Image (cartoon, rainbow, N blue to C red; front, side):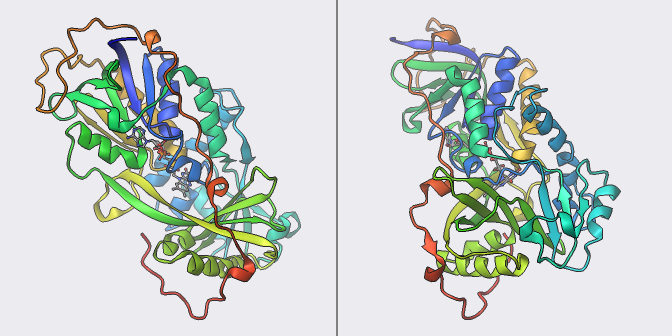
Length: 432
Ligand SMILES: Cc1cc2nc3c(=O)[nH]c(=O)nc-3n(C[C@H](O)[C@H](O)[C@H](O)COP(=O)(O)OP(=O)(O)OC[C@H]3O[C@@H](n4cnc5c(N)ncnc54)[C@H](O)[C@@H]3O)c2cc1C
């Protein structure tokens, strides 16, 4: 199809949870939108995430009602409605790992948990669990155990469901071949995908996670906008690991956050994050795994780690920049020209991010190609070409697949025998 020049409302770059949910929202609102994906959908953060739909309790542990807690507290109820199929997007086909997380403390302030939830009006306040009702793995824990109605989902399944709902509007791209035509920084007139196809959008949204930085440079938006906060996550599989989702809290810190799922061979896999994954950034795999084993034995005295295999993965959280590199309080959206750059900060906050972007896009914007001043190096204006409707996108254009989770791609798994006993405590680096 020679010289296809396609008019549309929105072009989205990046098909993680944020971009795919946004595409779903826009198409339901009758907007003509496509999503361009450079890799497999969810590559980067979403398939590496633990899938907890946080309700803010973690953020109140310092005893302050932080802005983070305020913005996140409505999210579990909203997600629950989507997961129950009574609100769009209908996510009833998404695999739920659990409808709740356990919370247990290793300090003496166990009673604070319930107090905090009530005090801050959290919608997901924890409920104390009697000794008899505890899961086997928490029976040896001395402190109070609570149940927190925060759902845990399979993020790969979320991506699959959203992708299936919107398949015809997903295009796989080679970023090296994409050419932007823009005027003032962020005023994008067209996006050329190859010699034959160019898109002519009213608005462009970057939801490419860590890829946002490079995309912004491609449209003349320089300046620091993004920060990365690295993690070195631990994975365990096999043995007698039960399915378990929970946080172990000490003071205001989350010592470990454990989530579990079945792998493709039917083994239970644990992902372990929290403080150990922050500290682990400075450690090599062996050091991290030895420390993680000690930490798990310390916070879960009943754990049986015989025949378990161990691995790690590194991943960066990509977020809008915050002074001091701290965690942003909420979602981050920047609007420059007809470009929006967005980071949800948390998976749980994706619906809020999408509502903000959809609102911004709903406001009338001019088509920027008219009267556009082209920058040197941009392709010649395509505005004179006859445009076609979005339905005329080439049907045989490659479509992106869904990324595999880290436990399916990890090639190196160590046995407990391979893990050295830590001879001396590794120096604790400062939390990222
Ligand atoms: C280890 C870990 C655990 C987490 N656990 C939780 C949790 O339990 N609960 C929670 O609420 N949050 C959690 N988070 C945060 C959450 O995962 C992220 O906030 C969220 O997934 C970000 O989604 P995203 O769509 O913005 O980005 P990403 O998931 O990173 O997706 C970006 C997409 O853009 C694509 N892309 C990149 N460059 C380009 C380009 N140039 N052109 C086109 N496409 C491009 C990528 O291939 C990818 O598909 C966790 C994060 C990490 C790292």
